[in-house]
Image 1 (cartoon, rainbow, N blue to C red):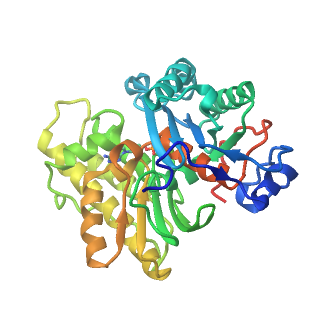
Image 2: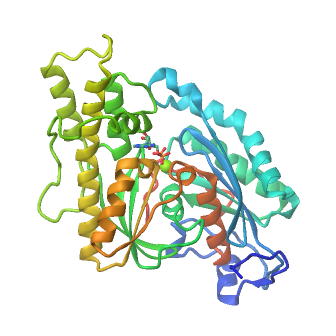
Length: 383
Ligand code: ADP
Ligand code: MG
C-alpha cells in the first residue's frame, strides 16, 4: 500500500523533530524562518492534512494533501491581465482577494475535508509580487490562527521543485532540477527534501519571460508561452537561425535577453508591423525558430549539469515545462543519455497549490513550522 493511503494511520513526530517545534530555534533548513514557539512534547496524529495556498503571481490556487497524497487542487487563472499584455500587480492582488475564499472552499470541498480537520496551513511567502503574496500569506496565517493550528511559510521556488514530488513516480535524491517559469530560470542540485544547491540561474530574462516578450513582439497575445508553443507546432524551426546563448564552455548560467533582442532586430530588419495583417506561416516560423533556440540552451545546460554532478535523475518544472517541444526533446535526450526524466503533468507546471501543500506536508513531518510574524519576501532566495 502506498504511503498515507489510509486515514487511520498513526504518525508520530519524533523528539528530535519536536525539539524544533518546541525550542523556537532557527535551523538552516527552514529558510531562516523563526520557528513557532510551541510547547508540545509529543504530537500523535491520526492523519496529517495540509492546506496549501499559492498566490505569488497571477494564479490563485489552493490544494489539500493528506499524508503525502494529493486530495484536491483548485486553481483560478486570472483572465483580467490578458487585455494588458502582461500581469498588472495591483489587478493581481485584487483578483486574489476576490478568489481566495472561493478557491480555498473549492479545494476543501473537492477533498471532502472540513477546515476543522486541517493539521496545518501552508502558504507561499516569496518570491513573487508583494501584493499578491500578501493576500495568500495573510489569509493562510489568519486561518491557521483562527483554527489554532500551525502555519508553514513556503518558498515558491522550493515548491516548484516539489511539483515533481506530488505524485508517483518521484525522482530519487540527488537529482538535478531545472525550474523554468515566468520569473525564474534555475538549475538546482536537489540533495534531499530541504537541502539544495543553486548551480546556475539566468543573468537577465527568465525563459518564460522571453516567451512572453517574443509573443508580444509578434502581437499574438498573452500569455505568450502557450501561444508561441501552439504557433511553433506549425512552423519551420530552421526558418531563422537565432543565437544560442551558451555563454562560456560548461557554464550553468543562462541569458535569454540576447535571444529576445535578436528576434526583435530580425523583425525590425524585415519591417515587420505587428498591427498589420498577420501572416500565420511567418508567425509560426519565427515562433518555431525562437523556441528551438531556447529549448536547445535549456537542454544543453541541464545535460551538462547532470553529467557534472553524476546524477541519474533529472527533473524539469515551472510554466515553461508545459512546452511541448521542450517535453518532446527532453524525452529523446534523456533516453540517449540514460537519465530518468521527471516532468509534472500540465496542471502542476504553472503555479499551483498542490506543490505548496506538498512542501507544507514534508515540512510539518519534520516539525518545521513558521512564526505568524513571517512577512512577504518578494526577493526570497532558494537557500
Ligand atoms: P511564475 O511562477 O513566474 O508566475 P509559472 O510557473 O506560473 O511562472 O509559469 C508561467 C510562465 O510559463 C509564463 O511565462 C508562460 O508564458 C510560460 N508558459 C506556460 N505554458 C507554456 C508553454 N506551453 N510554452 C512555453 N512557455 C509556457
Ligand atoms: Mg511559478
